[in-house]
Amino acid sequence: MSDEILRSRLTPEEYRVTQERGTEAPFTGRYWNEKRPGTYACVVCGAPLFSSETKYDSGSGWPSFYAPLAEDRVEREVDRSLDMVREEIRCRRCGAHLGHVFPDGPEPTGLRYCVNSAALRLVPEGGK
Picture (cartoon, rainbow, N blue to C red):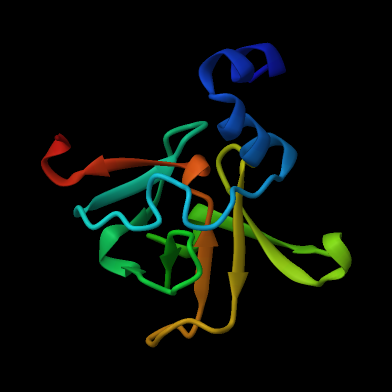
């Protein structure tokens, strides 16, 4: 999608996070404390990325999941910004920045996919 189309479809915060690799402040996003069952899709392209079944309260202030719906839904890349080395996660379909993955999550994976609410759209179970 062109930059013009993206800016018209996304809120300024969604654009900043997904296109400029931004991060929302902790405990401020619409999904950090969301409990409804459903599927979390990419806000840019609608690709299904995470299930509420793998969502857990990490205490970080961002939606956290221990696994994506399938490994091929997200791609990982080393992120050396902010004088840190982290692993960035992006939507494999459109390349939107989602957040980062860390090796401090619960079993069964031991991973914490720490995702910005602004990068997601919850599709509630039953479509409501």
